[in-house]
View 1: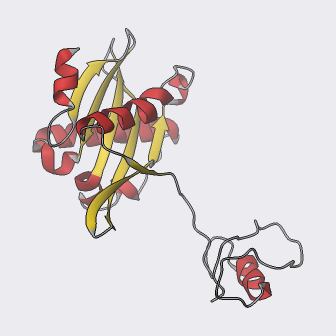
View 2: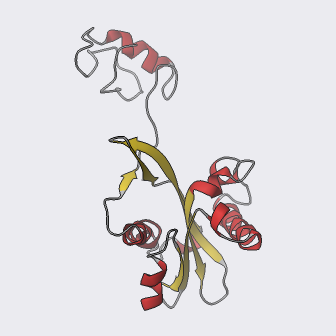
Length: 199
């Protein structure tokens, strides 16, 4: 176990270990710039295999699977394979987002794309894909605060609700000094956007 903690103390995280008798885990930070070309090609192929298992043979064309390697350069990948035959069964791709906080550059870990082979979804893998990966990054950066984001959608005037959000926003009271919930509007199926400035 000592080599696992030692691997977590480097400048970038890359650690592989047996999580149980059934599963082996590889957590790698920014594989697009930290591993060899052959290792990167292998992890890409294994993640694509999990996608096909989840989507009945279909593939994705966004995030990790968009053209180019930009997402692989800025993400933390957790890949889980079966110990018995090395078949990939799950992965998590968590982008590291660069932000400026108090005039200093920091990184926010976004809890991004997670896919688990349907045949393995009762295997209790969530704690590895989320909790263990975040804990490993927390240790790697010397137990300093780790900023995490789980936001997946932000309402906008013409997006994420389109017509309904556009209709609701003008109904808000015109008080630009504070954030406020919108005033009552005709009911429909869209969620009520809150905490928005009137545009």
